[in-house]
Length: 452
Image (cartoon, one colour):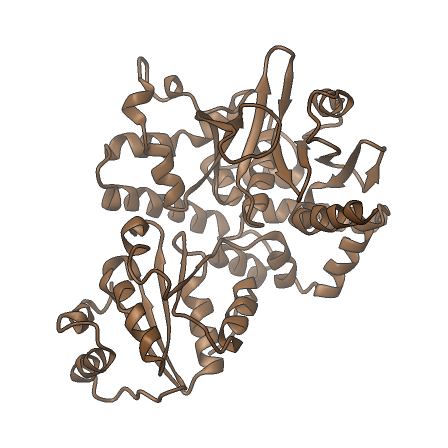
């Protein structure tokens, strides 16, 4: 099998295989982010025999669990459907794809783990999977991994840059050492390309193969249509039209100054209670990221937010660009004609990069006193405000958070923009493109503070 794009899940899968006590694995994520391709590549490199079953394309295989979940019974039923398959103990991987079409495959994981002869990986789109139901099956006998579209580091790998190159960028962050003007120019150009096309593997691969943007917008627009069709297909228990209305208005919310989700922007006289659960469904389906408003900028974050006040972002910034005008791709690359969207686009990109590092998204907004902050992250002991600047305006809110004693959990801040690396004694300045290294940076900085 030909290798297309290197992904971070590759190293995760290798570590999983090397664990002698490994459990059956479920890899979940939005559709078309590269789950199947990554698992197939890993399987081809590590197993003598691969039993791959796609429950959407091969519907008759759903019956393999009809006689129960004992492994030998499942093997017998698979052999009835395809007698040529080989089951080699210790050298066979069962790959159950499109899990959402056959939840029984999740129930079977407990029995495969207890049997111990074969490895199992399941994969499925978050769209259409009732994970509350599936995760109650085989509790304690499986492992879960959520996969995302490609992050900026994976994009750099696709462009030919090495881990050593990334490590050098990280050392500049730790040492608060500006990078060269040449690097700044090249990396900002690469980052604008990444934000323009997003991280969907098919889009990135088309861009890499063609060495330009031809064909990428068409793929992105089709993805947007596919997601909309899936909403119609899979929404259950909610008004499908209302879920689609929220999905189709994401760019409308982001165009507003405060970017907050407001029902009145969807339909006149619309009421919040009529749309309850719509944004949450889209988030569970892997289509959007939700950023909740903190009650106060303090720790802990969990429980310290208002579930009724939130912003919504596209999971993939390239899909945000594709949802705008036909010329939006070209405008972003030229850094022009974006108006209010310029801030929204980079805010969306930063939010997506934070989520891909495992962060949940929170912001803060208060009129008295006037204080607004785009995101908050944390290390072991500190709450860290993150401000995303589309221009070089003053950072009044960041300074106000840091100079007062009212928020003792806030010890330093981070400003992201078209700026080189720096530190003024209160907050660090980093260029947008280094956002993907923030979790690594704040963790190491927190360890250094703890030992001082």
